[in-house]
Image 1: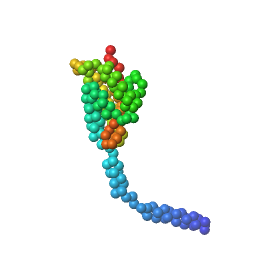
Image 2: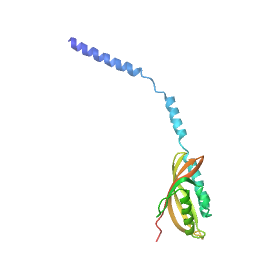
Image 3: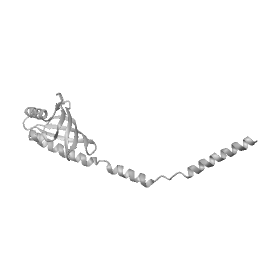
Image 4: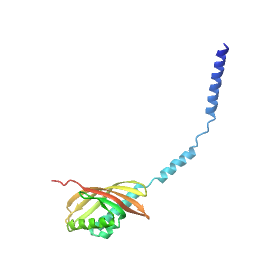
Length: 174
């Protein structure tokens, strides 16, 4: 009987200890958690503004492309940029990019114009990946070809520069 009282007393003591510890736990500071969540939300990049900025770059890119302005196009690229074009070897660095752009202009039909539409962007303020579509029209405005591309932009000295791009044509309609 003494053992029965001992186990009952020990069980009650343990239960009271757990109850005391549980009641004395520090309260969660909801103010701190709310502040942390607000700071995380505030630090998220404004992707709508970034998409608008990248679209402005693509619109300027199209204007330079349509004007056949090699130097203006090169200004969009970082010195260490790489371009992966459709059915062609990778082109790395501005000197190689210049030769590639000049060769493409020599093949481009007179009066043809390009349009680049940004479909999506993701990343942060410093590195943005863009997904877009391109349309090439002849001098009369008829669509000659369409394609899709991805570009990676890095902010360097406060300005986005293209560090990588990849492009390929859509299948031509028969």
